[in-house]
Image (tube, rainbow, N blue to C red; front, side, top):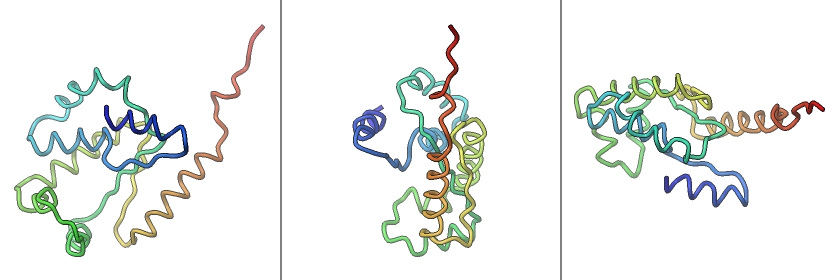
Length: 146
C-alpha cells in the first residue's frame, strides 16, 4: 500500500518504474514461507482495489546457469540471493509462483534474460513501454450515444 501511495504521488510528475511490486511480493512470500500461492492471493485480495495497477509488469526469466553467472558478479548479494540456491526447492517454488502470477496478470510481459546484458534488457523494456504509449487508448475515444 505504501508503494502505491508513492506511485500515485510520483505519477503526478511523470512515469514511475517500481522494482518488486505486488506480483513479486506474492510470489516471493509464498515461496519463502512455503505456503500456497492461492493463500497469498486471498490475503492480498481485499487490498487490490487500492493498489495502482501497473501498465506493464516485466517478468524476467533466466536459466540456472545464467542466474548463477549474474549472482557471481552481483556486488550487493544478500541472504535472499544465496537462499535461491542454498535452500532446497526455493528457486523452483519461486519460478513456479512467478509463472502462475504472470498467467493471471493482464500487465505481464515475460522477458527471457539469457544472453542479454542489462543494457539489452533495458532497451527491450523501453521499446515495449514506448510501443504501449504509442497505441491509442481505447477508452479515451468511447462513442457517445444521444
